[in-house]
Length: 424
Image 1 (tube, rainbow, N blue to C red):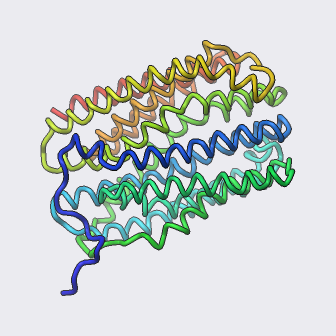
Image 2: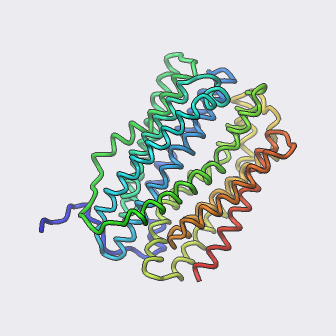
Image 3: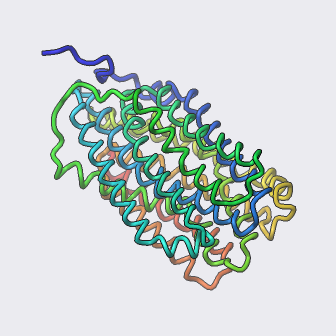
């Protein structure tokens, strides 16, 4: 038998507390790059792109998070869970990683066909009549499909610096072309939209040579693997929909007031700064919790969740305060007017971001217990509350704020109940 490749999975794991912290500095640095690229994109285009086109670009940015990073996070998370679980048991998982590569390809085909079928609606109501923005969205989905496998294997094997490099690379690949377009005097939304969408694809292609699939191992039955990914994909669409679709729906409703829709979208993204910081800990959270669940150590599992909850509480409080103190000033500088977005609105957006971080913690805990369907159920109930808020006779921005908070409260409450039940 030939020797295992250098990247074969480790057979032991660090204690949970150290596992949550090890390598997160590099990820936090990369997330600063990724977050800064997003805010720089929104800030630069806010000054040079017409108001209606800016609202469409902001909608593209958020839809990329839902149908790109969100949907294909199901592949990343399941790959990470399989790899880290195999490492805890001392089993190679190269065959399972190869299976996930096929899953990612199939998922890309399905989502691309769905977007093309809904293309006219997206172009007319969301992208301000510009089909090039739809092309940018399709390119981004392809990029996240490529990125999902390296990220899942890096996270599952504890190679967090490599994972961080994929994040930082994505941020730079998004930002640099947009800065070049701005320096060249481009003002059309189409150029910025395509450049934004090509960023993840370029980053994915660059990191593929780093990927080592690992030594062959046991074959995961498709009847087990596909439903697991399917439930994860459903929960990812619902969760990222809750996290990002509010401004997109507001944009579709405020057709006659695109400037206000654009300001709301920018404030929405600004309030999510703490989420970018928390992702560094979240990346290490799922593999660490999975190892605890795989060995039947539910005490360590509960300990890890408590640690993450404390981090969320601190970041959430800072996020609410920071958004209120800084948000209004930044909006006035970029847009010359807040367009009715006040301190209370900014504080509620910050609170919604805190609930989103709590959902991420509890999702990781339930996935570690292999409760994929229950995660999707929790998000489905939250999404029902989200939709209900937009059906009420409210101002579009007020409905968007209410949708974030109501859906967050429902989802967190359901997940917390389920975790307490199954982590005894």
